[in-house]
Length: 394
Image (cartoon, rainbow, N blue to C red):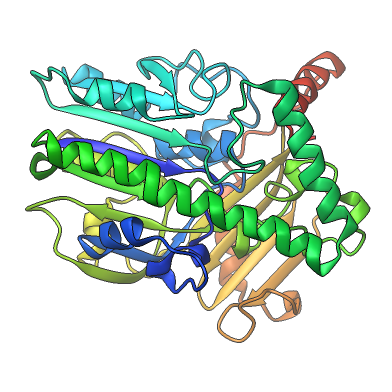
């Protein structure tokens, strides 16, 4: 079976109709979710693109793959691309900016950028003599909207204008930013994804192609910052925190003949994507932190905690364990903790760190034993900061 992955960057689950969104129209995404397995508690391994996407293609949490910024990938860490190539399958990836995502990543075979899907469509039209993995990453739902990152001057100007409105913080300004985001979501669903799925049907590939749809993280509008002047970059909209508006993502698997339509309430993680892709393609598993979503849907590994990690300027900075009804966040430098009862406080507003079950702390402590702590030289940190600034995070 072929496998196609579509990642919509910075897409919040609550802005998809299938997840209960109102005021935003996503019938194409909704239909895809209804045609297979829809996971209602999917959690990103990281709240920003670089570590999250690396977790998605390695099946490892960030503290194990060590990709904390737009830096060099550890060649000892295997990816799903390696597994497909070694099995003599075709691999093609299409990204928002080939100088950043998967740049230099062994076997990723980056063939184009996704301002439009023309290059993806051309590739899908083949010919294909072997089963394939096609991995598509779109920035249509990432601010600023509808401006290619390659148009650096225009992109930077639009980013600063968007942030300025959020810094102003008036209801009209914030609502205007949210409306732009909704338009980006609808464009992704009804233009990009609709075009891609339409091509699969038109070319006769749909019945032999599994489609995995998800996001790398969610989005915020600076709600967590009491002082809105602190909103200085994209990092402060996603990346700086581990709350659910950033970590909870849409995730659906639609594989003709392999998945029956179902809504799955089992908590899952984006590290589960790698074992899922390998199972769908009938390939051997590789070492990972994940469990195939097909197995999760069948009831395996129900109740397992999931972990999320974030970084700051190239170093691991926060870690979280989520095992409903609890979530525990630890700030690694200070040791400060936050804990929330998700059933009573889904907005994560009341810190109950003094009440958190000891079991969660034990699991988080044990997980952090494997953490790759990065001590950067001044020169290395400056290089990281430069790359992050170039992408608008700082």
